[in-house]
Image (cartoon, rainbow, N blue to C red):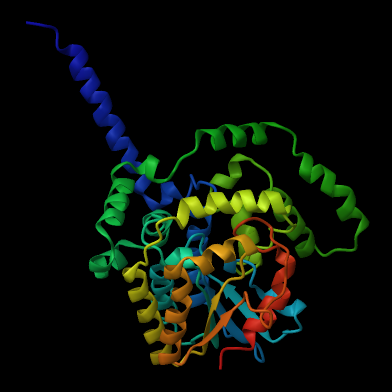
Length: 377
């Protein structure tokens, strides 16, 4: 009889690895190994939701405005409102990277658990979020943003392909977290090296008459843009700290991409998300349900179509399925008494500063924020 010991050892090792992998489904463990990008934002939104629901009395004379949307809505925040001359607004930004209407509904249902409703809601809606083939519903949204209760309630409105991807993200937890060895190595090196960013910041801070709170903000910004092991932990991550300070908004994308680079990156984006575009009727269902809840709760709202670069705008206009989407959205909004805004129209925005193929530079957002804030009635 052959020696089966190596086979038993192999089976034992594989079994151990499979069970060890499941540790990364425990929320406290996931909070200690946050991966860059979507996982950080979606985890922050859950944290911010707790702050919103448990907040003290809203400041007198200030409107509470909630922002829902994807990364094209990141720049809408209190600071941008103040730059636009809107000093009577407190903005809570809950936008998520590549977020779809299902995520907006998930958040709205929880927002309405508070006795104090927001005074207005701004909802950014990209065509990509209404497509069925891009796979962004499964990841990052189901993977990071939505809980199992929501999935159970609305499972008939989740495509089988997306449910399978979500199931695999739980079956193989480390893979589902999109754990990056390269990021781990980079952060280990960052922790071992001298903290150059903070050292360079010291002379500036010493030369300015700043309060301790203001100094802390500069430190957080410097640390958030560095790479070290503290960024993994939700409780120590300077990235979470910065998002907290800005009410969930993100102002890091500043600059203008050269036209040839913009065209090249737009072509890549189109090939990934917009080729063979098919409208997701599931996401249209979630969008209409969101609008129904807004009408029932009597919350003034505006739905806006984000401003995009000319090359991407041309793709939107040439693809009938995409060009007709905005008409369909505006008709839905009219039915439920919700304002709409197309930021590609000159009366809404004429900013031509494109940070990359998907996003405007942050210097476009004071004007955009001021414009959107005046629309919900």
